[in-house]
Length: 443
Image (cartoon, rainbow, N blue to C red; front, side, top):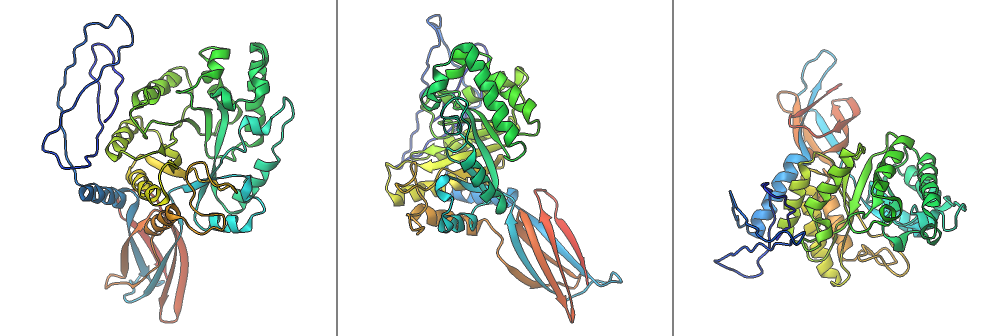
């Protein structure tokens, strides 16, 4: 259902959920206590304002659609007039969305370089990306002092040429398994010099190129650097990264936060507690990264966790979305659609990245296409949602007030207007807002 980190004598907010596979008229909620120390012998739990609200799948889906229409779309009124300011009734209007405001993308790997079919397939769909492994320390500096950024440079050139936003992943990975072997063998003093060099080298080279940086990846599960350099190592990473590139958006990035409530290392409260520690230490931390490697998703749990994280008022990204390869293609697609709809409909989620970089032997857990770029079921889901979450081409006429109104997804639009032998073309941006967006065009 959910997990909760509590403090003695304090009330804590618990929110979660579960899914019933068969009808039931009775629900019993159990609380399991994991004691932090042997001194916790007499523990009492008080519950206030408890509630359990049932939803059907259709009710849940309807609520998602309502939030999507409220948060991801906005009302627009186009006003058409002549040079004297007189409104023109019956002017023909063509409206076309040319880009989407919501970042939605996928991981890519070096396999995209020189692969024109892969590049074409990717840029036709996505406006955001992340390099799967190519910026990680064990790739860019496999031997001490032998830096090689050739591959990420080429990948960045491709991304830049197609006006795609890209996340920086990652500066450090706390899992020693993915730390360069030469780094693991350094003395403490040598390690301090190495990590400073890593930050300076990477972030100076790519200053202002990446929209985010995952600074210390998966630090709720692993702590290689803090074990070697002391408890303030992560603080130092964030501080140094901010000094080198003050405009960089720095993220925590972690798995098993929204995916499950069974991992005690990465409960939502543990995530928040670690983030608060960094903030108290003076860290400039700007975003919440949730990897989102799902098995069977628990949508009520996912929403409860997102709601709780949203109270921090920081942008939330689902950074590595996929579904376990233990499921067949069809089941992966079903679960993927559930996760994507839940993420897209949540007001605090600012972007979604799929972990679906394609290799000759497949993908990490889930592929969107085969090696010939023919969609698998998960790819069909992505294409369906991309189409659904975009305002299609619209044609209409101005009314007696010389106006034409519509609801559109946030993003950039192109508009063409014709009245008699007069025409005009223009563009406008539709950003988040509660008020109707008014746009004037003159013929």
